[in-house]
Structure formats: structure tokens, C-alpha cells
Length: 249
Length: 211
Image (cartoon, rainbow over all chains, first blue to last red; front, side, top):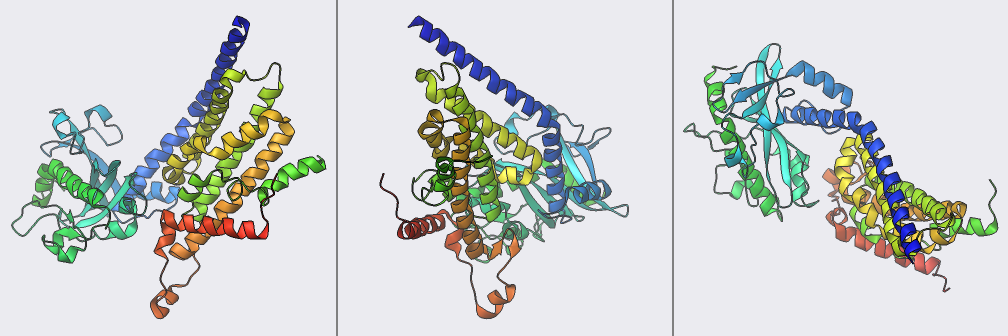
């Protein structure tokens, strides 16, 4: 019987060794391509928020447009630009999280990436990362504003795992298109963000300029989007104030 | 490579007469989840085919060499081989088509639990030669693919008027004749209905053999 056990253990060990060896080799070989894909996907979604690309845009065009039109830089919490750093070189550990649950955990001197859309030397838009909690998953995306720092240019979610057909609709064009031309500041110049309504925007209590149609059957995801926009915009508020005053364009 | 009559049967039988989904009722869960669009269905079919063929082959080789797989850890070894292959598919997909990876990653991971693979390993690969196991894998993957792609194609066509992303039902039909997409087809119940119909048609045309 002991002989049988020895064989069983040896067999299990050999199978594990071969399998793990195979997977490690595959993972290491594929890693550079995968990292390139992740980077490209982020660039594509920034372009999507800026309305410069859509989901089907080719990788080559994404690369070209990103280098041509998008300039990334880094700001601190007070909205001041930090020289010598770009979003690519910014250490993840030093980056502020804009997730509502993480805000309290952020370090005092954490930094934020910002992307500017530059056309013919003039800044025509502004984009930054947004992140928050939906029903099942973390929602990650980008919000782009026009050069007035008030009107929404576009919104793109690049990572979510909500219920397909319900909350998952936030990744669809019809939902994201609703954000276009909405305002994040009200007439009194207060930052009110954009609210996802319960049902149709025109029946909501908030003004139509700050409200988009909700997704029926996906209240928690919709509320999550409302919440994450308020908090992300809150983090960028000092910078937005400066940007709107024209001191930082 | 010539195939004997028995081997031909192993290859062709699961395509229709012993279809894994319609007759053996294996792998139905994934058939519901990934058939919203044809492209997803095709990628899922290819991934399952890869995993099924190789797991059948490797497990058959393991079972037929030396003293074979120790019976006490038979299923663990099966899972180990299957899981390794699935992770491999997942990693390759992440490198090759990132958009599709984002959509399908959850489901690709779940190939591990797809009963077709474990089922064919237990029912066929462990007791047959590697060559026959490969044929059995191809046949069952083919049968799975037929159902998946038919359901995926119908759901995309009826649910969003497109096939592989190309619009087949012209816009003018919507605006002029008031044609509407069938919203049910986009949701999981649409797949239930279609697979149910599929099984009905199949059993009417070619009743399952009672062995």
C-alpha cells in the first residue's frame, strides 16, 4: 500500500511540475504583448472619451492619434502641475485613487494624471480617469470635458463586469452618448456633476442639463456611476477651478 | 491517415446524432452565456475545441502509459490538465485580441467547469487510445460548435439585426415598416428558448438512440 502512495504522490508532483512549467513559460513569453494591449486599450478609451475614436478603431490609428492629439501630465491634489512627470512614468503607488471607498486612504501627497486634447497648439479638451463601485464590479473609465471645463465631451468605461444587458449597458454607446454636452457646473458656478436618473432624464428632479437617462433594472449600477462622477470630479475640482479661470491652459 | 469505421463513427456521431448539447445535455450553461453574438460563439467554440482535443489527447496518453493515472487522484489530474489548458487559452486570447478577452475572459475561465470536457475525459479518453480520443474531441467540439454558432447567429440576427457586427436587416425596415429587434434574444431567456427549439427539432428528426 505504501508503494501505491509513493507512486500517487510522485505522479501528482510530476503533473503539477509539468503544468506549472508550461504555464510559467507561456505567461512570461506573452507578457510584453499583453502589457502593450492594456496600454493601447487605455489610450483608445481616452480617445473615445475625447470622441476621437470608437471601439473598432485600429491599433495603429489609436497610437497615431494619441501621440498627435493627447498630452498627458500630472497634477497634485491642489491642482498644481508637477513638472517632469507624465502619466506613463507616474508610480502607481503615488497615484491618488478616485474610487469613493479609497478616498480616505489616499496619501497626503498623492498625484493625479490628467490628459489634454491639443489641436493646433490649443487645448480643446480635458480628460481624467474615473473609478467607482457598481453592483458587482469596479467601474473604470475616462471622462472628457470640452475646453470650457464644464461641458462633457464624452465618457468611456473600459473595465466593468456588471450584468450583461442591464448594468453592463454602461459600456454601450447609447448610455455613454447621453453624457455628451451635459454640464458639470450649474448656473451658480457650483460643481454639481452629472446625475444618472431613475428612468428617463426628463422626469427627474434634477435639471436636464445635469441629468442623463438611467438604465431600468440597473439602479445600483446607475447610482454607482452618479457617485463615482461626483467623487472623481471632487478630486479634480481644484484643478478644474484653475483651468476654468484660464490660468492653466 | 485512414480511419476505421469505428473511428469514423467516433468522429461523426457527436456532430448530430449524439450531439453533446442536444442529446448528452452537456455544456448547456456556457451555451446560454456566450451566444449573444456570433463572434463570441465562434471564439468560445474554438477555445473549447482546443481544450477538449488536447485534454482528451493528454489524458488518454497518461492513462495508457506505464501504470496509468493513480485512481485515487484521477479526477484531480484531469482537472489539473484541463485547467492548465484553459489558462493557456486565456493568456493567448489576452495577447491576441484584447477586446474579446475583456468580453470573454470570465467565460473562458469557466471552460474548466464545462461538463463536456470532464465528461468526455471520464467517458471516453481514459478508456481509449490517444488517436481515438483526439477524434472524439474533434467530434464533440464540432457538435458543440454547431449548436453554439447556430444559436449565436440567430440571437444576433433577431436581437440586433446584425451578423458578425455587419447590419443584415436594413435600417429602412426599422424606420419605414416599424420593424423592431427582438429584445428577448439579447437576454439569457432567448437562448433557453432557442436551445429548447433546437433540441426539439433534433429529437424529432433524429430521435436519440437508446443504447
